Image 1: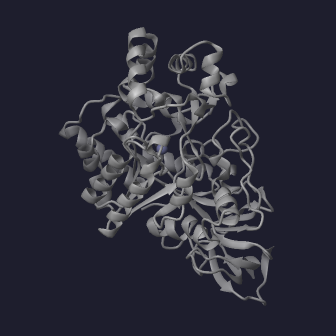
Image 2 (image 1 turned 120 degrees about the vertical axis):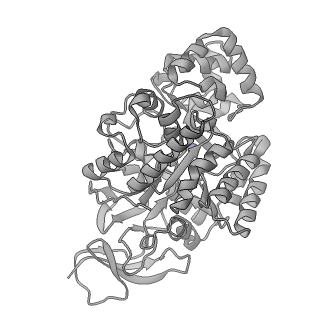
Image 3 (image 1 turned 180 degrees about the vertical axis):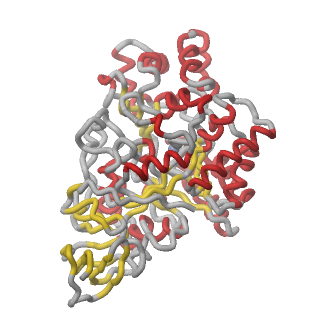
Length: 526
Ligand SMILES: [Zn+2]
């Protein structure tokens, strides 16, 4: 007697090969047989007639670690078929938190109305222990954020580290990896991580390479400096022996759209050289981050209090405005393309900065400065800055995988607020609906490969990412004819359609399209 049997589905096994009709037998947390199994009996039989049975999706870029302690069921993830998340991205992870800088770091990465139990952990290991105690619905492969590592050693200073400080940072990285981190991530537009020059990044990534860990990077620029930034990430991989993942790949800003092709060519060249360089993306034309990211790098030094002081000073405002017009990580040319996503001042959410600033007769720059002061930085933005043509070109690239850049939200409850980016709810469904079924940019087999077998291979997960005997039973059952994302920019709180069942380690986390509340997720370590 089996625990579970998925009958009569079309199995797309995650290798990219053509699908075939088969039953999938599950015992405990493993797939024990795949094939025509007419005599098999099971406690739970799932009829998958007319449906696709695929490996559970691997989200290569997730910030779910910032919310899982308070939202362990991660509904918006399981509702789009995700069974494993790679977290600790963009230089930010919930740990390590050192006493000296604890308050400032939490102010920087936390959200005030999300009741994260920050006092429950300090080291990277104690954070993972906390999640294992409370349980989570999905598997998690965590990275340690270089921003956390740097702030733990150097606070919010923009200075170059001395030798002792380099050693101390290396020590933090090694401790995190010994506790279970699969590598390190950088977010090189976010202070204090962005203060690290390439040589510093190479030094702290060396112990990662030695331990066969990964270097994930939100690179130093996705617009004006895209090509230089990709080159830097590749160089860090070359010098440290760490496989490289370019996070949320994009060419930002209409002036820079032409760079998407050359940027992919840089990745191709590195791969031809034998380096392991890959990328991930979400299929949308807008990105999203905190509004504070619009400020010049120098203006973000020193944490929240220091930023507030600058925002209050008229002379500094003039200087910031000048720098924001000519360069920086985000050079905004059109303010009617910047939408407020969530804000302590709730009325701003869902509105464009062009209208908001006009209404009160301010320049968009002054509006941004005032809004940052008023909300104490508790305000986010969605910026429309990518091209549809590039999305279509990038998706089929052989090194391209999928990442939501999202967290696990739910359509109801205390976290259903503001207008978060629809990628939180729709990313994987949008690829399967829009880009596979409607536009035929990818075949279904290839799309599934990019969501499962390819990331599993990259992460060297030997027993996940395929529908195969002895693999973990991370599985998704969906209807390829109707799968669609429903989340939109004005109304993001909508689960996709078409997903029937999702299993994590043999347990149903989504059954008949509904979350079960089960928390069978595990930590995946190096
Ligand atoms: Zn990022």
